Image (cartoon, rainbow, N blue to C red):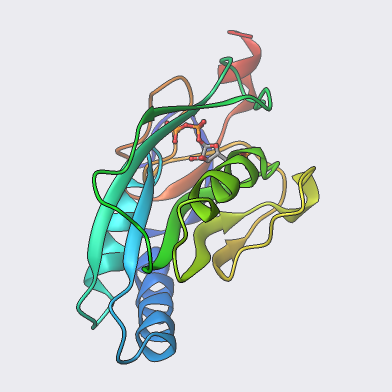
Length: 182
Ligand code: PRP
């Protein structure tokens, strides 16, 4: 049953599961013999993080950051705030930053600077969704689940106004939902 505010399903549960299994296999091969630290950028990535870590056959560790762009609505304002920092040191670690969506690149542009200063051995970015046509900062992901067009998507962790995160699929939100509120 599709949510009435969703115009169409972009990726079904099965499509998400099989693509994430592929990402997991790729990361497992690339980091063979190492113990990467997966850093989830909350809140949007919580579901992807849970599924991705279980698709990786390595001895990984996990940590979490809460990051927020200032401002509501459908467009990021460019300013980023760390609301909850990592719990562990990342010095000398192989970091994989896990994101649900890479859009303007503002969040990761800021975060990469903050994390690099803490001297990890390496940093790579894994994003479930990538909207390259929206990019305003020079950020490229090393692992991309899906490259998508510029539509407003929700579900599988992604929200609009904190709603729809729990939809098991990724769908395009009906424009009438945000046009009536902005
Ligand atoms: C989303 C997403 C990324 C960021 C990407 O987070 O999770 O962190 O936007 O956009 P950018 O590339 O333009 O910076 P959001 O601020 O919506 O918070 P959330 O994770 O709590 O949903």
